[in-house]
Amino acid sequence: MAARARLSRRIGAAAIAAAAGGGILLYGPTFSANDRGEAGAHISAIRQRIADPNVVVPSRATQASALIGANSANPLDVLVIGGGATGTGVALDAVTRGLRVGLVEREDFASGTSSRSTKLIHGGVRYLEKAVFNLDYGQLKLVFHALEERKQVIENAPHLCHALACMTPCFDWFEVVYYWAGLKMYDLVAGRHLLHLSRYYSAQESSELFPTLARNGKGRNLKGTVVYFDGQMNDSRLNVGVACTAAVAGAAVLNHAEVVAFLRDEDGKRIIGARIRDNLSGKEFDTYAKVIVNAAGPFCDSVRKMVDKEARSMICPSSGVHVVLPDYYSPEGMALIVPKTKDGRVVFMLPWLGRTVAGTTDSNTDITLLPEPHEDEIQFILDAISDYLNVKVRRTDVLSAWSGIRPLAMDPSAKNTESISRDHVVYEDYPGLVTITGGKWTTYRSMAEDAVNAAIKSGKLSPTRKCITQDLRILGGDGWDPSSFTVLAQQYVRMKKTFSGKVVPGVMDTAVAKHLSHAYGTMAERVAAIAQNEHLGKRLAHGYPYLEAEVAYCARHEYCESAVDFIARRSRLAFLDTDAAGRALPRIIEILAAEHNWDKSRKNQELEKGKGFLETFKSSKNAQFHDGKHK
Image (cartoon, rainbow, N blue to C red; front, side, top):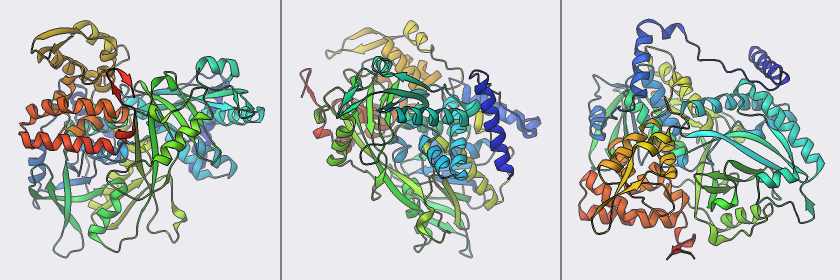
Protein backbone atom coordinates (compact mmCIF):
# COMPACT_ATOMS: atom_id res chain seq x y z
CA MET A 1 0.00 0.00 0.00
CA ALA A 2 2.84 2.35 0.85
CA ALA A 3 4.44 1.71 -2.53
CA ARG A 4 1.11 2.40 -4.25
CA ALA A 5 0.78 5.65 -2.34
CA ARG A 6 4.27 6.78 -3.32
CA LEU A 7 3.54 6.00 -6.97
CA SER A 8 0.21 7.82 -6.82
CA ARG A 9 1.87 10.90 -5.34
CA ARG A 10 4.50 10.87 -8.09
CA ILE A 11 1.92 10.51 -10.87
CA GLY A 12 -0.11 13.28 -9.24
CA ALA A 13 2.92 15.54 -9.23
CA ALA A 14 3.47 14.76 -12.90
CA ALA A 15 -0.13 15.65 -13.68
CA ILE A 16 0.27 19.01 -11.92
CA ALA A 17 3.43 19.66 -13.95
CA ALA A 18 1.64 18.80 -17.19
CA ALA A 19 -1.32 20.96 -16.29
CA ALA A 20 1.01 23.85 -15.65
CA GLY A 21 1.99 23.85 -19.30
CA GLY A 22 4.42 20.94 -19.43
CA GLY A 23 7.15 22.62 -17.38
CA ILE A 24 9.32 19.99 -15.71
CA LEU A 25 11.04 20.72 -12.42
CA LEU A 26 14.40 18.98 -12.11
CA TYR A 27 15.69 18.48 -8.60
CA GLY A 28 19.36 18.42 -7.69
CA PRO A 29 20.96 15.36 -6.06
CA THR A 30 19.99 14.64 -2.48
CA PHE A 31 22.63 13.87 0.11
CA SER A 32 22.36 11.42 2.98
CA ALA A 33 24.11 11.58 6.32
CA ASN A 34 26.68 9.19 4.87
CA ASP A 35 27.78 11.90 2.45
CA ARG A 36 29.09 14.06 5.27
CA GLY A 37 32.29 13.88 7.29
CA GLU A 38 34.95 11.28 6.44
CA ALA A 39 32.69 9.35 4.06
CA GLY A 40 31.87 12.61 2.27
CA ALA A 41 35.56 13.35 1.82
CA HIS A 42 36.09 9.92 0.24
CA ILE A 43 33.17 10.46 -2.11
CA SER A 44 34.53 13.87 -3.10
CA ALA A 45 37.95 12.34 -3.81
CA ILE A 46 36.40 9.62 -5.99
CA ARG A 47 34.36 12.16 -7.95
CA GLN A 48 37.40 14.38 -8.50
CA ARG A 49 39.49 11.44 -9.73
CA ILE A 50 36.79 10.32 -12.18
CA ALA A 51 36.26 13.90 -13.39
CA ASP A 52 39.98 14.47 -14.07
CA PRO A 53 40.49 14.42 -17.88
CA ASN A 54 44.14 13.48 -17.30
CA VAL A 55 43.46 10.52 -15.01
CA VAL A 56 45.40 7.36 -15.87
CA VAL A 57 43.51 4.07 -15.96
CA PRO A 58 45.60 1.30 -14.29
CA SER A 59 47.32 -1.02 -16.75
CA ARG A 60 46.06 -4.53 -17.40
CA ALA A 61 49.18 -5.96 -15.75
CA THR A 62 48.46 -3.92 -12.62
CA GLN A 63 44.89 -5.20 -12.55
CA ALA A 64 46.01 -8.82 -12.94
CA SER A 65 48.50 -8.39 -10.08
CA ALA A 66 45.75 -7.02 -7.83
CA LEU A 67 43.61 -10.09 -8.48
CA ILE A 68 46.52 -12.46 -7.92
CA GLY A 69 47.25 -10.68 -4.64
CA ALA A 70 43.75 -11.37 -3.28
CA ASN A 71 44.58 -14.44 -1.17
CA SER A 72 42.70 -16.34 1.53
CA ALA A 73 44.16 -14.16 4.28
CA ASN A 74 43.34 -10.90 2.45
CA PRO A 75 40.42 -11.59 0.10
CA LEU A 76 38.44 -9.22 -2.08
CA ASP A 77 35.08 -8.18 -0.72
CA VAL A 78 33.42 -8.83 -4.08
CA LEU A 79 34.53 -10.66 -7.23
CA VAL A 80 32.29 -10.03 -10.25
CA ILE A 81 32.02 -12.53 -13.11
CA GLY A 82 30.98 -10.83 -16.34
CA GLY A 83 32.01 -7.56 -17.96
CA GLY A 84 28.72 -6.52 -19.55
CA ALA A 85 26.60 -3.58 -18.47
CA THR A 86 25.42 -5.23 -15.27
CA GLY A 87 28.79 -6.68 -14.26
CA THR A 88 30.72 -3.47 -14.73
CA GLY A 89 27.85 -1.62 -13.03
CA VAL A 90 28.21 -3.93 -10.02
CA ALA A 91 31.97 -3.31 -9.90
CA LEU A 92 31.49 0.48 -10.03
CA ASP A 93 28.76 0.46 -7.40
CA ALA A 94 30.68 -1.78 -5.01
CA VAL A 95 34.03 0.01 -5.29
CA THR A 96 32.45 3.44 -4.79
CA ARG A 97 30.87 2.13 -1.58
CA GLY A 98 34.38 1.53 -0.27
CA LEU A 99 34.55 -2.21 -0.94
CA ARG A 100 37.54 -4.08 -2.36
CA VAL A 101 36.43 -5.28 -5.79
CA GLY A 102 37.63 -7.41 -8.68
CA LEU A 103 35.99 -8.27 -12.01
CA VAL A 104 36.84 -10.85 -14.68
CA GLU A 105 35.36 -11.14 -18.18
CA ARG A 106 35.99 -14.18 -20.41
CA GLU A 107 36.05 -12.16 -23.63
CA ASP A 108 35.90 -8.34 -23.65
CA PHE A 109 33.76 -5.73 -21.94
CA ALA A 110 30.40 -5.65 -23.76
CA SER A 111 31.41 -8.56 -26.00
CA GLY A 112 28.03 -10.24 -25.57
CA THR A 113 24.53 -8.87 -25.18
CA SER A 114 25.61 -5.40 -24.05
CA SER A 115 27.09 -4.42 -27.44
CA ARG A 116 24.24 -5.96 -29.46
CA SER A 117 21.33 -4.00 -28.04
CA THR A 118 18.72 -1.90 -29.83
CA LYS A 119 20.70 1.19 -28.69
CA LEU A 120 17.58 2.57 -26.97
CA ILE A 121 17.32 3.71 -23.36
CA HIS A 122 13.59 3.33 -22.83
CA GLY A 123 10.89 3.05 -20.21
CA GLY A 124 8.86 0.44 -22.06
CA VAL A 125 5.81 1.85 -23.83
CA ARG A 126 4.45 -1.68 -24.42
CA TYR A 127 4.70 -2.51 -20.71
CA LEU A 128 2.62 0.57 -19.97
CA GLU A 129 -0.01 -0.68 -22.42
CA LYS A 130 -0.11 -4.04 -20.59
CA ALA A 131 -0.29 -2.28 -17.23
CA VAL A 132 -3.34 -0.27 -18.31
CA PHE A 133 -5.28 -3.04 -20.07
CA ASN A 134 -4.45 -5.76 -17.56
CA LEU A 135 -4.64 -3.47 -14.53
CA ASP A 136 -1.17 -4.79 -13.72
CA TYR A 137 0.46 -2.69 -11.01
CA GLY A 138 3.71 -4.66 -11.34
CA GLN A 139 4.09 -3.61 -14.99
CA LEU A 140 3.36 0.01 -14.05
CA LYS A 141 6.12 -0.06 -11.44
CA LEU A 142 8.52 -1.43 -14.07
CA VAL A 143 7.72 1.46 -16.41
CA PHE A 144 7.99 4.11 -13.74
CA HIS A 145 11.33 2.75 -12.52
CA ALA A 146 12.73 2.44 -16.05
CA LEU A 147 11.76 6.03 -16.88
CA GLU A 148 13.56 7.25 -13.78
CA GLU A 149 16.67 5.26 -14.66
CA ARG A 150 16.47 6.39 -18.30
CA LYS A 151 17.00 9.99 -17.22
CA GLN A 152 19.90 9.00 -14.93
CA VAL A 153 21.74 7.04 -17.63
CA ILE A 154 21.56 10.01 -19.99
CA GLU A 155 22.71 12.48 -17.33
CA ASN A 156 25.59 10.26 -16.13
CA ALA A 157 26.99 9.77 -19.65
CA PRO A 158 25.87 12.86 -21.60
CA HIS A 159 28.52 12.41 -24.31
CA LEU A 160 27.31 8.88 -25.13
CA CYS A 161 23.55 9.27 -24.62
CA HIS A 162 20.86 11.63 -25.87
CA ALA A 163 17.11 11.98 -26.30
CA LEU A 164 15.69 10.59 -29.55
CA ALA A 165 12.38 11.49 -31.20
CA CYS A 166 10.37 8.36 -32.06
CA MET A 167 7.61 8.59 -34.69
CA THR A 168 4.64 6.19 -34.66
CA PRO A 169 2.62 6.18 -37.92
CA CYS A 170 -1.20 6.06 -37.73
CA PHE A 171 -3.31 4.80 -40.63
CA ASP A 172 -6.77 5.42 -39.21
CA TRP A 173 -8.20 7.95 -36.79
CA PHE A 174 -8.68 5.37 -34.05
CA GLU A 175 -4.91 4.76 -34.08
CA VAL A 176 -4.30 8.51 -33.85
CA VAL A 177 -6.43 8.79 -30.71
CA TYR A 178 -5.15 5.52 -29.24
CA TYR A 179 -1.43 6.29 -29.64
CA TRP A 180 -1.82 9.97 -28.69
CA ALA A 181 -3.58 9.04 -25.44
CA GLY A 182 -1.15 6.23 -24.66
CA LEU A 183 1.94 8.35 -25.23
CA LYS A 184 0.50 11.24 -23.21
CA MET A 185 0.16 8.73 -20.37
CA TYR A 186 3.81 7.75 -20.96
CA ASP A 187 4.71 11.43 -20.51
CA LEU A 188 2.60 11.58 -17.38
CA VAL A 189 4.20 8.55 -15.75
CA ALA A 190 7.66 9.97 -16.54
CA GLY A 191 6.81 13.08 -14.54
CA ARG A 192 9.91 15.09 -13.68
CA HIS A 193 12.02 12.51 -15.56
CA LEU A 194 10.35 13.48 -18.84
CA LEU A 195 12.73 14.11 -21.76
CA HIS A 196 10.31 16.05 -24.02
CA LEU A 197 6.54 16.14 -24.44
CA SER A 198 4.96 13.93 -27.11
CA ARG A 199 2.76 15.46 -29.82
CA TYR A 200 0.69 14.71 -32.91
CA TYR A 201 1.80 15.68 -36.46
CA SER A 202 -0.39 15.72 -39.55
CA ALA A 203 0.44 13.55 -42.56
CA GLN A 204 2.01 16.53 -44.34
CA GLU A 205 4.09 17.53 -41.32
CA SER A 206 5.16 13.91 -40.84
CA SER A 207 6.38 13.67 -44.43
CA GLU A 208 8.48 16.79 -43.93
CA LEU A 209 10.01 15.36 -40.75
CA PHE A 210 10.51 11.86 -42.20
CA PRO A 211 10.80 12.15 -46.01
CA THR A 212 11.05 8.40 -46.69
CA LEU A 213 7.82 7.62 -44.79
CA ALA A 214 5.11 6.33 -47.15
CA ARG A 215 1.87 8.33 -47.07
CA ASN A 216 -0.20 5.64 -48.77
CA GLY A 217 0.01 2.09 -50.02
CA LYS A 218 -1.74 -1.27 -49.71
CA GLY A 219 -5.09 0.46 -49.37
CA ARG A 220 -3.98 2.62 -46.44
CA ASN A 221 -3.58 6.37 -46.14
CA LEU A 222 -1.44 7.99 -43.48
CA LYS A 223 -3.59 10.06 -41.14
CA GLY A 224 -0.68 11.42 -39.13
CA THR A 225 1.93 10.36 -36.59
CA VAL A 226 2.50 10.67 -32.87
CA VAL A 227 6.06 11.53 -31.86
CA TYR A 228 7.39 10.75 -28.39
CA PHE A 229 10.89 10.68 -26.89
CA ASP A 230 13.12 7.96 -25.49
CA GLY A 231 16.88 7.84 -25.06
CA GLN A 232 19.60 6.49 -27.34
CA MET A 233 23.16 5.42 -26.56
CA ASN A 234 26.42 4.07 -27.92
CA ASP A 235 26.06 0.90 -25.90
CA SER A 236 29.50 -0.73 -25.94
CA ARG A 237 31.33 2.54 -25.44
CA LEU A 238 29.10 3.22 -22.45
CA ASN A 239 29.93 -0.26 -21.14
CA VAL A 240 33.67 0.27 -21.60
CA GLY A 241 33.30 3.67 -19.94
CA VAL A 242 31.68 2.11 -16.87
CA ALA A 243 34.46 -0.51 -16.68
CA CYS A 244 37.20 2.12 -16.91
CA THR A 245 35.41 4.31 -14.35
CA ALA A 246 35.34 1.37 -11.95
CA ALA A 247 39.07 0.83 -12.56
CA VAL A 248 39.86 4.49 -11.83
CA ALA A 249 37.77 4.24 -8.64
CA GLY A 250 39.91 1.29 -7.49
CA ALA A 251 38.36 -1.92 -8.87
CA ALA A 252 40.64 -4.53 -10.45
CA VAL A 253 38.89 -5.20 -13.78
CA LEU A 254 40.39 -7.76 -16.16
CA ASN A 255 39.02 -8.65 -19.58
CA HIS A 256 40.01 -11.82 -21.45
CA ALA A 257 40.14 -13.66 -18.12
CA GLU A 258 37.91 -16.67 -17.44
CA VAL A 259 36.67 -18.46 -14.33
CA VAL A 260 37.53 -22.15 -14.77
CA ALA A 261 36.63 -23.41 -11.27
CA PHE A 262 35.36 -22.25 -7.89
CA LEU A 263 37.17 -22.46 -4.57
CA ARG A 264 35.26 -23.62 -1.47
CA ASP A 265 35.86 -23.34 2.24
CA GLU A 266 37.10 -26.29 4.31
CA ASP A 267 33.56 -27.54 4.90
CA GLY A 268 32.74 -27.23 1.22
CA LYS A 269 29.63 -25.23 2.08
CA ARG A 270 30.58 -21.79 0.79
CA ILE A 271 32.26 -20.35 -2.30
CA ILE A 272 35.32 -18.36 -1.22
CA GLY A 273 37.06 -17.66 -4.55
CA ALA A 274 37.72 -18.74 -8.11
CA ARG A 275 40.43 -20.20 -10.31
CA ILE A 276 41.06 -17.71 -13.13
CA ARG A 277 42.69 -18.30 -16.50
CA ASP A 278 44.21 -15.28 -18.24
CA ASN A 279 43.25 -16.07 -21.83
CA LEU A 280 45.97 -13.80 -23.23
CA SER A 281 48.90 -15.36 -21.37
CA GLY A 282 47.38 -18.78 -20.71
CA LYS A 283 48.40 -18.57 -17.04
CA GLU A 284 46.06 -19.55 -14.21
CA PHE A 285 45.80 -18.17 -10.69
CA ASP A 286 43.49 -18.20 -7.67
CA THR A 287 41.55 -15.17 -6.48
CA TYR A 288 39.74 -15.16 -3.14
CA ALA A 289 36.64 -13.13 -2.32
CA LYS A 290 34.05 -12.96 0.46
CA VAL A 291 31.26 -12.93 -2.14
CA ILE A 292 31.13 -13.68 -5.86
CA VAL A 293 28.54 -11.94 -8.04
CA ASN A 294 27.58 -13.86 -11.16
CA ALA A 295 26.66 -11.30 -13.82
CA ALA A 296 27.45 -13.44 -16.87
CA GLY A 297 24.27 -12.55 -18.79
CA PRO A 298 23.08 -15.43 -21.00
CA PHE A 299 25.86 -17.59 -19.55
CA CYS A 300 24.92 -17.16 -15.88
CA ASP A 301 23.41 -20.66 -15.76
CA SER A 302 26.66 -22.23 -16.97
CA VAL A 303 28.46 -20.39 -14.15
CA ARG A 304 25.92 -21.62 -11.58
CA LYS A 305 26.22 -25.19 -12.87
CA MET A 306 29.96 -25.10 -12.23
CA VAL A 307 28.91 -25.13 -8.56
CA ASP A 308 25.83 -27.35 -8.82
CA LYS A 309 25.22 -29.40 -11.94
CA GLU A 310 21.59 -29.84 -10.94
CA ALA A 311 20.90 -26.10 -10.54
CA ARG A 312 17.56 -25.10 -12.03
CA SER A 313 17.90 -22.78 -15.03
CA MET A 314 17.26 -19.08 -14.60
CA ILE A 315 17.64 -18.05 -18.24
CA CYS A 316 15.10 -18.10 -21.03
CA PRO A 317 17.21 -16.79 -23.95
CA SER A 318 15.70 -14.72 -26.73
CA SER A 319 17.42 -13.13 -29.69
CA GLY A 320 16.91 -9.87 -31.47
CA VAL A 321 18.20 -9.36 -35.01
CA HIS A 322 19.24 -5.94 -36.29
CA VAL A 323 20.42 -4.69 -39.66
CA VAL A 324 22.24 -1.48 -40.54
CA LEU A 325 21.25 0.48 -43.63
CA PRO A 326 22.50 3.73 -45.22
CA ASP A 327 21.63 7.04 -43.60
CA TYR A 328 19.02 8.00 -46.20
CA TYR A 329 16.57 5.44 -44.81
CA SER A 330 15.93 7.65 -41.77
CA PRO A 331 16.47 11.36 -41.12
CA GLU A 332 18.96 12.46 -38.48
CA GLY A 333 17.36 12.67 -35.04
CA MET A 334 14.08 10.89 -35.87
CA ALA A 335 13.24 7.20 -35.41
CA LEU A 336 10.30 5.28 -36.86
CA ILE A 337 8.65 2.74 -34.54
CA VAL A 338 5.76 0.53 -35.63
CA PRO A 339 4.25 -1.02 -32.48
CA LYS A 340 2.50 -3.86 -34.26
CA THR A 341 3.27 -5.38 -37.68
CA LYS A 342 1.17 -7.97 -39.51
CA ASP A 343 2.66 -10.81 -37.40
CA GLY A 344 2.45 -8.89 -34.13
CA ARG A 345 6.10 -7.90 -33.82
CA VAL A 346 7.52 -4.43 -33.32
CA VAL A 347 9.60 -2.97 -36.15
CA PHE A 348 11.79 0.10 -35.82
CA MET A 349 14.27 2.22 -37.74
CA LEU A 350 16.66 4.37 -35.74
CA PRO A 351 19.32 6.84 -36.88
CA TRP A 352 22.56 5.78 -35.17
CA LEU A 353 26.11 7.06 -35.67
CA GLY A 354 25.35 8.31 -39.16
CA ARG A 355 23.57 5.16 -40.32
CA THR A 356 20.15 3.52 -39.82
CA VAL A 357 19.51 0.55 -37.51
CA ALA A 358 16.40 -1.53 -38.25
CA GLY A 359 15.16 -4.44 -36.22
CA THR A 360 12.50 -6.59 -34.62
CA THR A 361 11.55 -7.71 -31.15
CA ASP A 362 12.94 -10.90 -29.63
CA SER A 363 12.40 -14.55 -30.63
CA ASN A 364 13.46 -17.81 -28.95
CA THR A 365 17.06 -18.91 -29.50
CA ASP A 366 19.90 -21.10 -28.27
CA ILE A 367 22.78 -19.65 -26.26
CA THR A 368 26.00 -19.33 -28.28
CA LEU A 369 29.12 -17.22 -27.90
CA LEU A 370 28.75 -15.55 -31.31
CA PRO A 371 25.09 -15.60 -32.36
CA GLU A 372 24.44 -15.02 -36.06
CA PRO A 373 21.37 -13.61 -37.79
CA HIS A 374 19.59 -15.89 -40.25
CA GLU A 375 18.95 -14.64 -43.77
CA ASP A 376 15.19 -15.13 -43.36
CA GLU A 377 15.26 -12.85 -40.28
CA ILE A 378 17.16 -10.19 -42.21
CA GLN A 379 14.68 -10.45 -45.05
CA PHE A 380 11.74 -10.21 -42.65
CA ILE A 381 13.06 -6.89 -41.33
CA LEU A 382 13.57 -5.55 -44.85
CA ASP A 383 10.07 -6.66 -45.90
CA ALA A 384 8.49 -5.22 -42.74
CA ILE A 385 10.04 -1.76 -43.04
CA SER A 386 9.30 -1.61 -46.79
CA ASP A 387 5.57 -1.51 -45.92
CA TYR A 388 6.14 1.90 -44.33
CA LEU A 389 8.65 3.49 -46.72
CA ASN A 390 8.51 5.09 -50.14
CA VAL A 391 12.06 3.96 -50.95
CA LYS A 392 12.98 0.58 -52.41
CA VAL A 393 14.48 -1.65 -49.71
CA ARG A 394 17.25 -3.91 -51.02
CA ARG A 395 19.35 -6.67 -49.44
CA THR A 396 22.39 -5.14 -51.13
CA ASP A 397 21.90 -1.99 -49.04
CA VAL A 398 22.54 -3.88 -45.79
CA LEU A 399 25.88 -2.71 -44.38
CA SER A 400 25.94 -5.01 -41.36
CA ALA A 401 23.64 -7.43 -39.54
CA TRP A 402 23.86 -8.91 -36.08
CA SER A 403 21.99 -10.93 -33.50
CA GLY A 404 22.05 -10.40 -29.74
CA ILE A 405 20.92 -12.76 -26.97
CA ARG A 406 18.82 -11.26 -24.23
CA PRO A 407 18.76 -13.21 -20.93
CA LEU A 408 15.11 -13.09 -19.87
CA ALA A 409 15.03 -14.19 -16.23
CA MET A 410 13.09 -16.92 -14.46
CA ASP A 411 12.98 -17.19 -10.69
CA PRO A 412 14.50 -20.65 -9.98
CA SER A 413 12.52 -20.87 -6.74
CA ALA A 414 9.20 -20.44 -8.59
CA LYS A 415 6.91 -23.44 -8.99
CA ASN A 416 6.21 -22.95 -12.71
CA THR A 417 7.79 -21.50 -15.83
CA GLU A 418 5.25 -18.68 -16.03
CA SER A 419 7.65 -16.65 -13.87
CA ILE A 420 9.57 -15.36 -16.91
CA SER A 421 10.07 -11.68 -16.19
CA ARG A 422 11.02 -8.52 -18.00
CA ASP A 423 12.42 -7.39 -14.67
CA HIS A 424 15.67 -8.67 -13.17
CA VAL A 425 16.22 -11.42 -10.63
CA VAL A 426 18.81 -11.50 -7.83
CA TYR A 427 19.28 -14.98 -6.38
CA GLU A 428 21.71 -16.76 -4.07
CA ASP A 429 21.18 -20.48 -4.50
CA TYR A 430 24.61 -21.41 -3.12
CA PRO A 431 26.29 -19.57 -0.22
CA GLY A 432 28.82 -17.07 -1.50
CA LEU A 433 27.49 -16.95 -5.09
CA VAL A 434 24.94 -14.22 -5.86
CA THR A 435 23.44 -14.24 -9.37
CA ILE A 436 21.96 -11.16 -11.06
CA THR A 437 20.28 -11.56 -14.44
CA GLY A 438 17.41 -10.33 -16.60
CA GLY A 439 16.43 -6.68 -16.83
CA LYS A 440 17.61 -4.37 -19.61
CA TRP A 441 20.29 -1.79 -20.42
CA THR A 442 18.12 1.07 -19.17
CA THR A 443 18.07 -0.29 -15.62
CA TYR A 444 21.64 -1.61 -15.41
CA ARG A 445 22.57 0.84 -12.64
CA SER A 446 19.72 -0.08 -10.32
CA MET A 447 20.24 -3.79 -11.10
CA ALA A 448 23.83 -3.38 -9.96
CA GLU A 449 22.66 -1.62 -6.81
CA ASP A 450 20.35 -4.54 -5.96
CA ALA A 451 23.12 -7.06 -6.60
CA VAL A 452 25.60 -5.20 -4.38
CA ASN A 453 22.99 -4.98 -1.61
CA ALA A 454 22.54 -8.76 -1.83
CA ALA A 455 26.33 -9.29 -1.82
CA ILE A 456 26.72 -7.13 1.28
CA LYS A 457 24.09 -9.21 3.04
CA SER A 458 25.58 -12.53 1.90
CA GLY A 459 29.16 -11.70 2.87
CA LYS A 460 28.32 -9.59 5.92
CA LEU A 461 30.38 -6.84 4.29
CA SER A 462 30.97 -3.40 5.78
CA PRO A 463 30.77 -0.68 3.11
CA THR A 464 31.92 2.76 4.23
CA ARG A 465 29.14 4.57 2.40
CA LYS A 466 25.83 4.08 0.62
CA CYS A 467 25.32 3.69 -3.13
CA ILE A 468 26.36 6.87 -4.97
CA THR A 469 26.03 5.79 -8.61
CA GLN A 470 22.66 7.48 -9.16
CA ASP A 471 24.39 10.78 -9.86
CA LEU A 472 27.94 9.62 -10.63
CA ARG A 473 29.14 10.60 -14.11
CA ILE A 474 31.36 8.14 -15.89
CA LEU A 475 34.80 8.97 -17.31
CA GLY A 476 34.55 11.72 -19.91
CA GLY A 477 31.11 12.88 -18.83
CA ASP A 478 31.89 15.44 -16.16
CA GLY A 479 32.38 18.90 -17.69
CA TRP A 480 31.33 17.76 -21.19
CA ASP A 481 28.75 19.68 -23.21
CA PRO A 482 27.55 19.48 -26.83
CA SER A 483 29.84 22.31 -27.94
CA SER A 484 33.01 20.61 -26.60
CA PHE A 485 33.93 19.44 -30.11
CA THR A 486 34.73 23.02 -31.16
CA VAL A 487 37.86 22.99 -28.97
CA LEU A 488 39.15 20.00 -30.94
CA ALA A 489 38.32 21.60 -34.29
CA GLN A 490 40.04 24.87 -33.37
CA GLN A 491 43.11 23.68 -31.49
CA TYR A 492 44.24 20.43 -33.14
CA VAL A 493 45.32 19.21 -36.56
CA ARG A 494 45.47 15.66 -37.85
CA MET A 495 49.03 14.79 -38.86
CA LYS A 496 48.89 12.01 -41.44
CA LYS A 497 51.52 9.76 -42.96
CA THR A 498 51.19 9.30 -46.72
CA PHE A 499 51.95 6.02 -48.46
CA SER A 500 55.40 7.38 -49.29
CA GLY A 501 56.09 8.04 -45.59
CA LYS A 502 55.77 11.82 -45.77
CA VAL A 503 53.89 13.52 -42.91
CA VAL A 504 51.24 16.04 -43.97
CA PRO A 505 48.77 18.06 -41.86
CA GLY A 506 45.02 17.59 -42.13
CA VAL A 507 42.09 19.56 -40.80
CA MET A 508 40.38 18.34 -37.61
CA ASP A 509 37.09 18.58 -39.48
CA THR A 510 33.71 18.87 -37.80
CA ALA A 511 32.70 15.23 -38.39
CA VAL A 512 35.88 13.90 -36.75
CA ALA A 513 35.79 16.47 -33.93
CA LYS A 514 32.16 15.64 -33.12
CA HIS A 515 32.86 11.92 -33.21
CA LEU A 516 35.83 12.18 -30.83
CA SER A 517 33.90 14.45 -28.49
CA HIS A 518 30.91 12.11 -28.28
CA ALA A 519 32.93 8.90 -28.10
CA TYR A 520 35.47 10.01 -25.47
CA GLY A 521 33.89 13.02 -23.78
CA THR A 522 36.44 15.17 -21.99
CA MET A 523 39.11 12.56 -22.83
CA ALA A 524 38.83 13.46 -26.52
CA GLU A 525 41.69 15.96 -26.36
CA ARG A 526 44.06 13.13 -25.43
CA VAL A 527 43.05 11.26 -28.59
CA ALA A 528 43.42 14.44 -30.66
CA ALA A 529 46.90 14.98 -29.20
CA ILE A 530 47.96 11.49 -30.34
CA ALA A 531 46.59 12.23 -33.82
CA GLN A 532 48.61 15.44 -33.92
CA ASN A 533 51.83 14.55 -32.12
CA GLU A 534 52.29 10.90 -33.14
CA HIS A 535 51.24 11.31 -36.78
CA LEU A 536 48.20 9.04 -36.36
CA GLY A 537 45.63 11.46 -37.75
CA LYS A 538 44.50 9.43 -40.74
CA ARG A 539 40.99 8.01 -40.99
CA LEU A 540 40.79 4.22 -40.70
CA ALA A 541 37.97 3.85 -43.23
CA HIS A 542 36.65 6.03 -46.01
CA GLY A 543 33.40 7.73 -45.04
CA TYR A 544 33.82 7.15 -41.30
CA PRO A 545 35.35 9.50 -38.70
CA TYR A 546 37.42 6.88 -36.86
CA LEU A 547 41.12 7.79 -36.57
CA GLU A 548 44.29 5.74 -36.27
CA ALA A 549 44.97 7.61 -33.01
CA GLU A 550 41.94 5.94 -31.44
CA VAL A 551 43.52 2.51 -31.80
CA ALA A 552 46.61 3.64 -29.90
CA TYR A 553 44.55 5.45 -27.25
CA CYS A 554 42.26 2.47 -26.66
CA ALA A 555 45.22 0.10 -26.39
CA ARG A 556 46.83 2.35 -23.76
CA HIS A 557 43.81 3.50 -21.78
CA GLU A 558 40.78 1.27 -22.48
CA TYR A 559 42.08 -2.31 -22.28
CA CYS A 560 41.78 -2.89 -26.04
CA GLU A 561 43.65 -6.19 -26.43
CA SER A 562 42.63 -7.42 -29.88
CA ALA A 563 41.55 -6.19 -33.30
CA VAL A 564 38.01 -7.42 -32.64
CA ASP A 565 37.96 -5.45 -29.38
CA PHE A 566 38.51 -2.33 -31.47
CA ILE A 567 36.29 -2.88 -34.51
CA ALA A 568 33.36 -4.12 -32.41
CA ARG A 569 33.48 -2.36 -29.04
CA ARG A 570 35.92 0.59 -28.86
CA SER A 571 34.77 1.77 -32.28
CA ARG A 572 31.56 0.51 -33.91
CA LEU A 573 32.87 -0.21 -37.41
CA ALA A 574 31.84 -3.89 -37.39
CA PHE A 575 28.28 -2.92 -36.46
CA LEU A 576 28.09 -0.05 -38.93
CA ASP A 577 29.78 -1.44 -42.03
CA THR A 578 31.45 -4.86 -42.34
CA ASP A 579 33.14 -3.95 -45.61
CA ALA A 580 34.74 -0.84 -44.09
CA ALA A 581 35.76 -2.80 -40.98
CA GLY A 582 37.42 -5.49 -43.10
CA ARG A 583 39.36 -2.91 -45.06
CA ALA A 584 40.53 -1.22 -41.85
CA LEU A 585 41.66 -4.44 -40.14
CA PRO A 586 45.28 -4.56 -41.43
CA ARG A 587 46.06 -1.00 -40.27
CA ILE A 588 44.33 -1.55 -36.92
CA ILE A 589 46.42 -4.68 -36.37
CA GLU A 590 49.59 -2.82 -37.34
CA ILE A 591 48.97 -0.15 -34.70
CA LEU A 592 47.96 -2.65 -32.01
CA ALA A 593 51.07 -4.71 -32.77
CA ALA A 594 53.23 -1.67 -32.09
CA GLU A 595 51.37 -0.98 -28.82
CA HIS A 596 51.38 -4.58 -27.55
CA ASN A 597 54.61 -5.89 -29.13
CA TRP A 598 52.94 -8.58 -31.25
CA ASP A 599 55.01 -10.80 -33.48
CA LYS A 600 54.13 -11.77 -37.06
CA SER A 601 52.32 -14.92 -35.96
CA ARG A 602 50.05 -12.98 -33.61
CA LYS A 603 49.31 -10.41 -36.32
CA ASN A 604 48.26 -13.15 -38.74
CA GLN A 605 46.12 -14.71 -36.03
CA GLU A 606 44.41 -11.38 -35.36
CA LEU A 607 43.64 -10.91 -39.05
CA GLU A 608 42.02 -14.34 -39.32
CA LYS A 609 40.02 -13.80 -36.13
CA GLY A 610 38.87 -10.42 -37.36
CA LYS A 611 37.69 -11.80 -40.70
CA GLY A 612 35.92 -14.70 -38.97
CA PHE A 613 34.20 -12.34 -36.57
CA LEU A 614 32.95 -10.12 -39.41
CA GLU A 615 31.50 -13.15 -41.15
CA THR A 616 29.14 -13.62 -38.17
CA PHE A 617 27.78 -10.19 -39.23
CA LYS A 618 27.07 -11.63 -42.71
CA SER A 619 30.00 -9.66 -44.17
CA SER A 620 30.18 -11.65 -47.41
CA LYS A 621 26.53 -10.87 -48.22
CA ASN A 622 26.49 -7.23 -47.15
CA ALA A 623 27.08 -4.11 -49.25
CA GLN A 624 30.59 -3.88 -50.62
CA PHE A 625 32.38 -1.03 -52.36
CA HIS A 626 34.95 -1.41 -55.12
CA ASP A 627 36.61 1.55 -56.82
CA GLY A 628 34.09 3.86 -55.18
CA LYS A 629 31.12 1.90 -56.53
CA HIS A 630 28.46 0.15 -54.46
CA LYS A 631 28.25 -3.51 -55.45
